[in-house]
Image 1: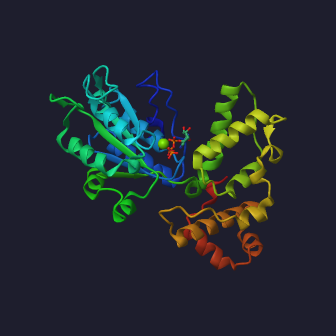
Image 2: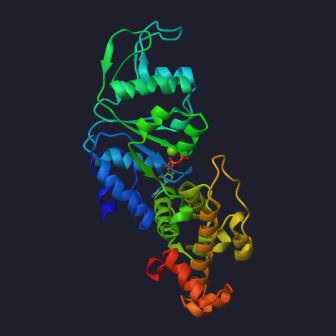
Image 3: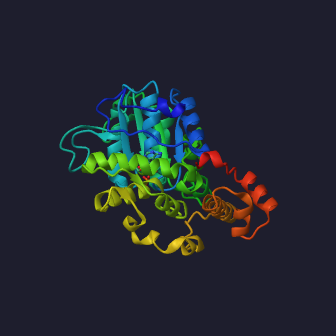
Length: 339
Ligand SMILES: Nc1ncnc2c1ncn2[C@@H]1O[C@H](COP(=O)(O)OP(=O)(O)OP(=O)(O)O)[C@@H](O)[C@H]1O
Ligand SMILES: [Mg+2]
């Protein structure tokens, strides 16, 4: 399985990079894409909601590719003010500006023979977008205040939690840079789209936090997993990781039970299913996808509650059996994925 390939610890013993966990169809597509593109030099754009594992995917691409022995250099374009970001990326010569007391290499230079990870690329200012585009095209640049042309052999992986095509449509992101970046697009699926992975991820995080926090939780009760399946996970895998961390630390017994769940999970299944409407993201969403996803979660829950007896599940949610079968087919709900 592609997942087994993604173990960068082998190539980079000092890296604290964890494995990408998952067996669902959407994550398998990501593994397949990583396998196909990790050893090319083409630019990759990873898009996905916050906490879906974009940075993990970027590292998997680097550590499984032919640049694994080179550096992985991350830059968070959203966290650094524009003027600083330019000098972070290009470097500067001594005396280029007031605080430039010594010459400093930029991240483009540091990423020579390796990967430059441009995180939160949508936050980059339009002025800088122009400059970056030039560097990406020419693969050479000058440090700020310098005249020497510097060449660097880097591969770019960019990531964003916005819909970059929309940003282009609204004039907030340059179209030419967009096309330059999106040679190989990778989509990190939301946790809602990969319910099959929730249990696996939860167990993985229990093991992780048992180790980190010196606890010995033996497992997770099925009711907890049911609550997880009914929750919309706006913060995706990061949110699940945080929830498990908290539960592992605070749990009284050997198993994680509903009593250990944070408040927001304990409103009972029906109100969780009624579901508070999450804030609609600024880039909008597709109503039919969201509703479809919701339907899918309800059907999975009904099937679980009735031990996968279709007649009973259909009765429970007041649809006829044929409708239920048709929907299960459409949403690719297979018992084997859940038991
Ligand atoms: N499939 C996965 N398997 C194991 N851990 C995961 C997986 N996906 C995400 N994580 C973990 O979830 C956390 C968030 O992942 P990451 O930082 O890569 O997300 P992100 O998409 O870059 O988020 P943001 O948009 O907020 O920057 C990390 O601790 C990461 O290790
Ligand atoms: Mg990130």
